[in-house]
Length: 382
Image (cartoon, rainbow, N blue to C red; front, side, top):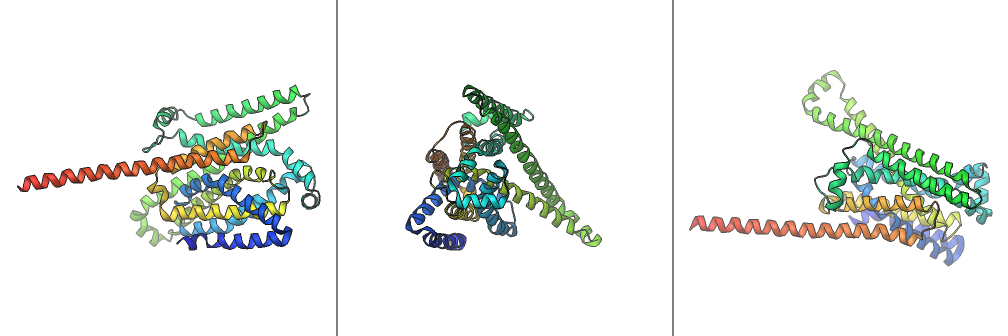
């Protein structure tokens, strides 16, 4: 099971590390290994959240996520995305941007760093909306009840998460603008960039998440009616409509997963520049890490880990909220990637430990209940 799920990841790791040695020797090997570990540590919460969405999808779409999705994640976000960012921010063609990435690495790194406010605002708002919509939803299972109970009541207010996200964006942009003005106003235009990028992230979340949720709800309604309408649909030749709907639902859920992965990968791509500005090594290291994150996602789904450890999803969403805040803060202040990774790992480890304690308590309660039933049977038999 483990080899079947992680087989491709192991193969890509071997190929990537060999390619690194041929490209830049043992120093390149070490850099790629470090980047791989960085990506996995920063994206573990991504795997948990992805698993919660992926378990709703069919085996076919799970395979699409592992094949086409990997190509988008590895080549799109880890290789093409930084080049596109440079091309847009420096107003140059993609070929010029690639040439710059390969031949003038310091200039390339500077251009990506300059584009960081817009990247952080977009990704931060997208991730913040995921966290807010999760925390404001009334759930049967609650982890940190003293926080989640009152917030679930507040969540009954319409559009509250959008309002809070916009307030956070305005405060961030205003703080950034004030900071820039105090330094001569050289970066005042960045406040506008942060606002536009943040609103773009919010719109992207609402459109993709909204379409995904809409088609998912439609699919559930269709499945409820499927049994009664099966004979009639077969006679009228309309049976394909349910399949088409399932395809739409799965497609938009897949699209939502890809945008989610893109938002998660922002901090990894930016953080990678603290280790190297060589785009080839960056793509190799982050690409290998992305493969493991995807394999881990599928493993969690197939093992039913989220059903066994019910607080894991809560921990992952708290980690998302923390990452969103960190991304917004990095618009003005630099935060070490180690801190970003540790926050996510600590929250998920805490939620896992809480889940284990809950399972033990439930097992103990069931054991006591069975024991009392046995005693009752013995006494009645006597």
